[in-house]
Length: 402
Image 1 (cartoon, rainbow, N blue to C red):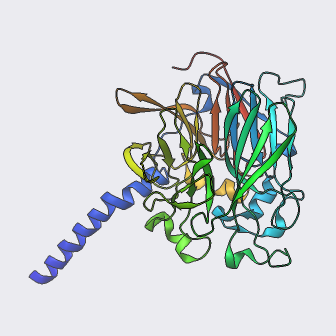
Image 2 (cartoon, rainbow, N blue to C red):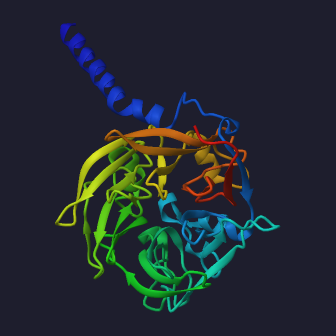
């Protein structure tokens, strides 16, 4: 009997430890059980959806606040459902005909139709895996090179092909992703292809790029495997990392293994911010002389996170998922279900970080499933995109944020 009591006591202690260090975080932080989610009316914005078939599934957006133009990488909701390795969509035949688009919007000129002069930026000089100009965009970053020139670094989730450029079964191999670099002249409707970075051993599941400068960048591998059982277990066991790529195209692992590292960004302070879609943290890294990352801080948000956007003043805006169960329903059927959405604003304060809500929509009635946010310091407008939602969102300030 004594030995049985001892075993029982050990099991209770182990269960308590497992709850405290693993299950508690999954239940309350990842899934958001019991989390208080506020209605959109609590926040100082009037928000509306920008709806057009070409503005569906805009996974990532970037704001050129100097030229007053927002760029969105849009794929189409049905096509994103079919083809998106991170979410298990491996039907390459369901890709959007003609490929994804980079759409430009003039943020100060909404126009009578409310579409901000929407126009596509066409690739020139780029040939994809299948021999055409089709892009399969995920995340991207941009760098202002001079008064007239921008460089775009785009994660391109190409389909796998055989020697004849015929698409093969992606369920067996996953995507054949690259990073594509384009040059865009401000005001133009074409972007010139500069180079392709292909490093399948080091960049196998790219999610988003953060430009370092002089042609170098870091990129998150959001999973440790493209397909298979290990990928499905990664929310628990971890997987994915951050890779560093030099201007020459040579890439190497730059971080330890992480848990679903997502929309990385380089801050105004030069630090690298890596959000997790599992554990609700933003890990803060410093680039070392050997081009590897040293963790210098961690920001605890208690929300699964997606892409980070840095505004002109250096504040961080990051999209979070306050109710993961409803988010998964919206991912499965985005035309039928809306999901609550949270945009967090993070400010540096007294050597630390102050985390607060910029806006939240408990019912997802206007903002649903947002995965990226960009804040315009000049006007106070907030622009939101989503990996699957069939619209963009713009929020206009109605009073000063608290």
